[in-house]
Image (cartoon, rainbow, N blue to C red; front, side):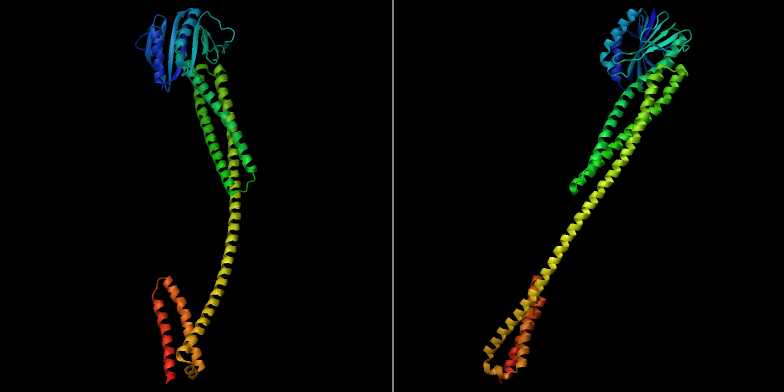
Amino acid sequence: MADLHYYLYFLASDEEVVGSVWEKIQGLYNLSDRETDPEKAGASVSRFASAEGVFASLSVAGHIATFELIFKDASSGDMTALLGTAREAVEEELLDSIGESTLLIDPEGESKGEWTPLPDGLLPGGSFSVVPEKRGDPRRFFIKGTENGVLLDWIREKLVPLDRLTHEMARELGFDEDQHETVSGKMDEMNRQVGGILNEKSKKLSHLEEEVSAISDIHAQMTNYNSLLGNIAHRLRSEMPWFDRLHSRAFGVQDTFFQKGIRRRAERLLDSLSQTQKELSRSLENARAAVDVIKSRVDLNRSRTNLELQQQISSMMRQNIHIQEEMQVAGVAASLIEFFVVLYYGLGVWKTLAGEELMHNIPPALTGALISLFSLSVVIGTHKTAKALKEKSTRPVLLWGVIVLGMLGALVWVTGLYAH
């Protein structure tokens, strides 16, 4: 007759799942709750139930909850059926488990076929072998020997903690390897994108700015991936010393399935992570250099654009200066024309009003001086008055009005003076 131990590991935070497993197993075998004996069951056991030949316990260590189901003194056929029934009852919850293992203790049985024997001398008076877990099947341990207190303590205090940790590490390693593979693929893709952008010869400023933005986004993604890989490596390096301590407690310096299946797998992943991080560091440097190159292209493009703009502005300014010079010349010409028009008509009006005979009495020099000053005051006064009205100022209007009236008064006074 043999004993079969069945272990299920869950995250302690999945309280609903753990509670569901307990209720289903308790109902399946009509187990009755019992008080726990810390010396026999362990200090971490929180629930214990039993029926004839069947015992169940639930313990929590750290963030992992361990469910243990024990079938006592049954034949191998009965154990296979009992285990199959138990696994079928909690089939839904198995999807949320971290891992599952069975331990068969049989003083007469022999491990055959796929069983891998562990080094001799691990257990006093017995042998130990294992079948690694496969998808959908639990990990299986086999001990040829008689159940006793020393053996049960070794199982509870050394084997189960190591088994629990390796299940957790195996699950995490699966996720980590998938993430590493994904990051490696993404890294190759991003390197191609950076190379493709650098090889483009676009001269449009808008396109160059889009390229800077694209490479900056790639650089940010690479930084995130580098941080992700760093976190994975840090966690593995933290877990491996704990694994070494548990393994040493259980097996000393013996080379076992746990080292081959877990530790070396973790070491290979760490080596791959280190290599990928180095490649990522080079890729980050290349991305930064690419950003600098594209920014230089942007600066050159902007410099050319600014130079062309400055040349256009310079050309426009030269045109404006030329136009202003022509306008000034035209303004001077118009003022001269205006002066001579006022002079001509002013002299004609003066002669008409004063008469030809009187105008002969006035000295020509005085006549020319007075009519010239009058015409000049009219022309200047007109321009100053227009400017004053534009600036909404009345003082220049009054000043030049007085000057023009004064000149008219001078003309009238001179006419009257020579009329006598």
